[in-house]
Image (tube, rainbow, N blue to C red; front, side, top):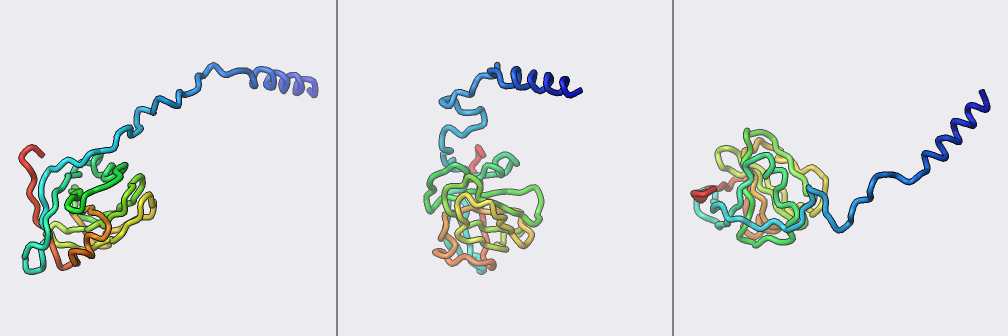
Length: 170
């Protein structure tokens, strides 16, 4: 029995340490899912932030994230964004939403909006690359991501709201 164990162990040692038939990955060829080019902002509409009395506060160009894939990608892998640009997330249902900043290189304000187009919560200065959950706390049907400091600069608060228009080809 002892000899069988020694022979079996020797077999695994000899044949287990041999060269593998697998080829090593080429470090110059990125995996299929790797982002090789920074996404470019695509203007798909305009969004107006409005006061509680429905007066215009400021207007931004928006890129739309209305599919699960686009919502998941969000603003990941972008190194910059202009102050008058943002991403409008449209969810399938009004419910408590949650974001994170995985692979997001720029600090953001995330503005959560209910189906009545009223701001319900603002998460200010969300830090790049953070995996911390950023909750809406209230039911939200929409969210707008803008550069950090935007909400403070324009004095946005939960009593404010939005109006938006999408371009024809969106």
